[in-house]
Image (cartoon, rainbow, N blue to C red; front, top):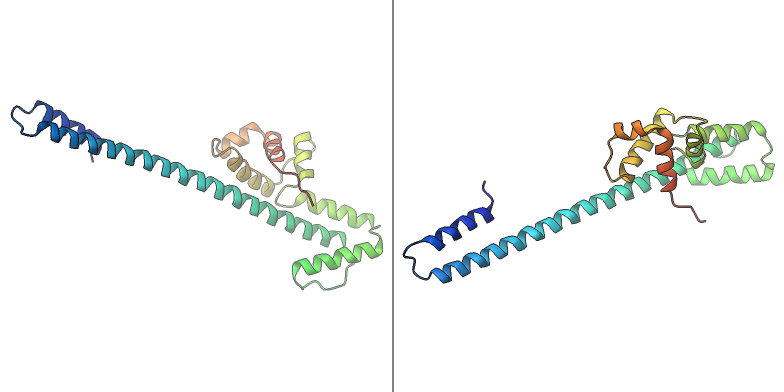
Length: 191
């Protein structure tokens, strides 16, 4: 289908050269008005497309933030479970309730079990969503992402670079570069 503006321009040029067209000026004024209306609609469509793109980006950033918070909570719960291997309280209750009971359990025992502390650290380092400690270790070159952490980090980096880089291009920049990108874009938590 031909662009309506081109069709209108062609029609206008034919009206201009028509040998005996009555009300030529009226026709030209109407054609010019239609051309302006088409231009205004094209500009509005372009603005709406940009609005959609901006909304999709905002949605993706919000989804990523939601995934990050869910991953952080999941990591905290698993870390608490690893740090409290001897906990015998409710384990099948609501997750937050169980986590709070585990914290109480740790507080009453002084949290002195070095094996539990090491298990908690290992749980943090192997969680599917990399924590700040994992990101810092990757940046420092003392470890690499696990497969799950790399997948999550690539997804996050794609959003953070506004889809300007493909997963392959991100991978080529290296895990330390990806980790640094993610870490510098994390807002500090204030609690």
